[in-house]
Image (tube, rainbow, N blue to C red):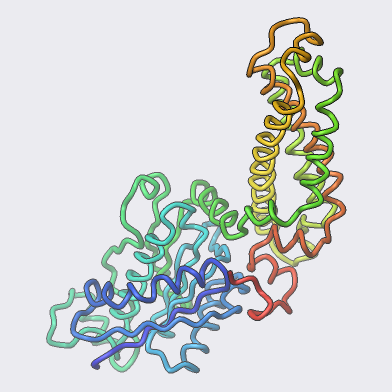
Length: 395
């Protein structure tokens, strides 16, 4: 065979962006790390089904159908859907019989995601290539003993991948803390030949971080305009109240920190309740731990967005306080010399109170607007199966 066509089937949004960026790099990498005797052609087709199925086998089946339609030799599905098996996060799964593999981006974490995805795809292609009877290395090349036995016992069929240990991504500090392990299922009825899984506890922490990245929390800041307007209006009004100056001057850093935490928690809770963002396992017909995973991702997504909004509001309040409040006038009311720390303390308390007021303002936002800003394509698709690629945000 002179060339092999590899199809990348990413879900919309972040997986699609990464696949598009990798399409130019992969042919050279595959020649270097898989087989340099052939020409590699990489095609990218965004498929919404890749971002809607909760099970690796279902994603692989959908990828196989699309691979046959497109006439590809191999296919790799990229999803931002969290995949799990026996309570452990599944980073990737391989089916040599279908010549399809799937890689889940959230378990890879949030740092070096592009590089980890690239390394993962190369390893998965190697697994598929080595396990395919039609595409595997020529008979004249050296093979491990168990590879030769496998080829002889399954002549005319797809070979199972070799039992040689393979790393999905290169070893780094994060892989030492939360290693990705290669597991070969013993069940012959399992269409998946190889799974790469993360540890239960540490792997779920990295999985949650990846889910938050997929939800893109920074969009919430630009979407909830009425919330930010209400918070800043409250802060501007509160800055001219002498009672607030005295309260801020009397509070210590511990109480100010507690007030900040309370305001952020109140904001997050109000958004969740007001816009029905909390999932119930009975309604979704999902295991309780799966619903808890999505709820945790929602809380973290909102927390990151609200914390960022809090920081921006704090900077604005500091500037407003410096412009509106003369140091001499403030000193005459507080009864002691005024410095930068006094302005910071006043702005800190004012921002916390304004954030609580902004929580009430968030109820004015359209529910669909908040969902679009809070959920990535994955969760919007789960909440509304009628969402298609055409109306998804693929910026």
